[in-house]
Amino acid sequence: MQETGAEVEISNLSVSYQRNRETVAALSGVSFRVEAGTTCAVIGPSGCGKSTLLYVLAGLIRPQDGQSLINGRETQPGRRETSLILQDYGLLPWKTVWHNTILGLVIRREAAAAIRAAGEQVLRQMGLWEMRHRYPAQLSGGQRQRVAIARSLAMRPDLLLMDEPFSSLDALTRESLQEALLDILQGGGLTVILVTHSIEEAAYLGRRIVVLTPHPGRVTAVLENPRAGDKHYRQTEQFFRLCRNLRRILEGVYHTGTNEYTARSASTRRNAGR
Amino acid sequence: MPSSPARFDRRHPAGQILIKAAAVCSLFLAWHLLSLALNSPALPTPAGAFAAFFNQLPDGLGHDFLISTWRVVASIIISLFLGVPTGLWLGTDERFDRFFAPLIYLTYPIPKIVFLPLVMVLLGLGDVSKIFLITLVVFFQILMTTRDAARHVNKAMVLSVSSLGAGRLDIYRHVIWPAVLPEVLTALRIGSGTAIAVLFFSESIASREGLGYYLMDAWSRYAYAEMFAGIIAMGALGYLLYLCLDWLEKAACPWKQV
Image (cartoon, rainbow over all chains, first blue to last red; front, top):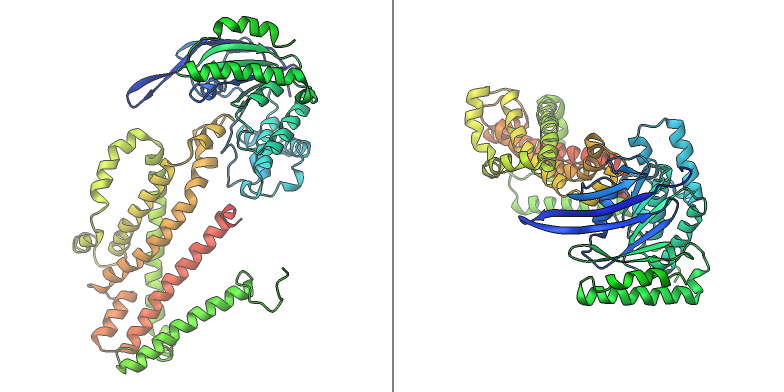
């Protein structure tokens, strides 16, 4: 892992794509910052362009307008220190846990000894070493997602992009994986941008929470959440207050689909952390 | 509830062998009974047919069996080498697919066997014309299956591997090829049956070698036991091909077994 984590700055980002000969705007004028070594949760309803945002940061989609900067440099496809984790299908069903984990390193044509060492280290870290010969079909949902995380960590990233990584898991597995993620982040040196539709997940993990409106995706609120990352935070009154606050903002987004809460975002930003 | 150790377990390897043996026995029993009921030299008993098969093996049947096997296997290998890369290419490159799709759509439904007279005129009566015709049939099946499988490879999977820095060749190697491999093997299995049917037809006309020739020759001489020996040889060829493909699937797609 890199020393400090990547600093991400998105300014005035707009992305549209063609569907049935129509131009559909996925993101419009999206701007926010993520400081190095922190976790940012992006939340919003379906169609708010959350995934598109990650694909832009991973260099898989080129924006029509605006900029996305990682450590002050324009996002490039194939940036070695950026790693993307998807909700499903991130793992290849024909590769064992071991071969899935080292896939990125094999693609980078790293030396065999380095691949072996990195693979073993992350699999042990994620508690998967004993399962290295199994195929994804032989794993539970939680174990599969652990492999996906292991594969990302093996690449020694400074920016981890997660697209609804825990959404298909049951509540207890989800919580245990969220805690596993916090353990990884304790080591420092990793910036995480996590896209989610779960209010609790955004509140538990996101030091900064960005709320998007749908069709097209626009930033409607940015909330600061300084206690995120504390494992006991989930049981505190402050956590529940933040969840209620987020719910109100999202309900507004669902019902009006507009920027009704933009005006409130400044006060939300001030109050959220208290 | 603990199961009794004496109970028959069909998942156990011994149980599976027992089921297979029972299936074979009932097939032979039905054949035997039918033969007795018809009481015609045209349908010998299984024992008579197999006796003729083993008698005939060193006496020309073995040679024809090898000739036919060579023709089918060569056709299947050529079809694979032509069909798989073309299918992968068309399935992943929309521009080329748009151009070739109507062409394939027009030519695929034509029964290729109707070209037999033309192929014999152009390529002669030997191996080449037969291999060409079988290849023509099997190639299209493999091409269509590979193209459709490549088209339907999960985009999220491609995206996820792309995000690891994979180039086009890496995507083919790690995602598209393993994703289409089981489909290709299924197409081969279906194709091998068709290949033997086309082989029989092409060998039965103006031919001096091969199982098709052997069978039709025996038929024209009213040598029914020999005819059945030829039928058993054809069946054995199909079965051997099927076993090989089964083994290939187990070896090449271990994730399918879990």
